[in-house]
Amino acid sequence: MKDKIKNAKSIEELQALYTDTFGKNGTMTAKLKTMANLSNDERAVINAENSELRQLFKEKQTELENAALNAKLATEYVDVTLDNEPENRGTLHPLTQSLKELSAIMESFGFTLWTGPEIEDDWHNFTALNTPEYHPARDMQDTFFLENGNVMRTQTSAIQIRAMEKHGAPIKIFAIGSTYRKELDATHSCMFGQMEGLYVDKNITMSDLIGTLRSMLSKFFERDIEIRIRPSYFPFTEPSVEFDMKWGDKWLEMGGAGMVHPNVLKNCNIDPNEYQGFAFGFGWDRMAMIKYGLNDLRKFYDGDIRWLKNSGF
Figure 1: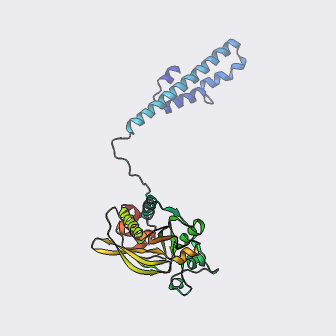
Figure 2: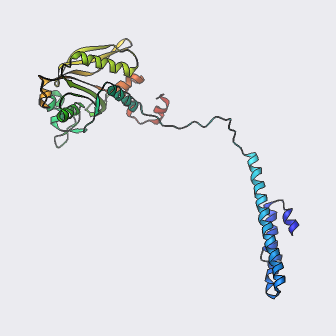
Figure 3: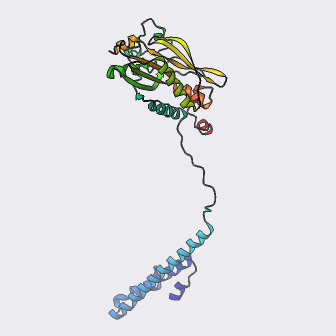
């Protein structure tokens, strides 16, 4: 039996020998059944044989299993010279990337980030910004009014009011956040991202505003940007302007700006005879549209992973 165990060629053959030896009718099983009638010396011989055979079976089983594994490994291997499978890696959304870039630019100019609530009261969204009750901006065609009299924030300028109320002057902040208006077309959305800058101190002039705008746009678009200032009207600035930038052979409207209206400073307990300041605002998602060459703002919000993967962002 020992020779048969040592010469077994497969697990199946070894299993058959094991059954012949230790099965219900096996040779060793039969010997073990007679041990009650044997002397101690005879029992010792059978026990030794039993242990030896079991050890042989165990060793042979390990040998055959290792041989089978090595044979399988010889035919299944990984060619490390092949190219890796492409990684399905996530990327920052282009709006998120643009916001990070703009925020870094503003912080490099010494502005501090401020945020505020998206549901605003009348004071911070309109009245403190020198917006009379009859002003068109309060019209329900533009503003989402809530049942309790509050509104969905129409502009991040409300954050400027909260910052000035809390810290007074001098102050140098930029505000970012979502704003809401009743409009929806290829270049507008009922919700859009807005960024504003505010700088109030002694001896602040329109030249400081123009220089900040030109530097911000040049850094964001990574080229020298030519800007154009046009007279405009906003209730919270005086004088008020709109600023455009030259993109190729076209002038593109970018946002509104101006010197903070004295009434706004007064509403925040800041003396307009001692302090002056400028403010500006723009839609940073529209900035992203221009930078990435899109013609429809709504593509940013479709949530189409295929578009994000194939758009090069």
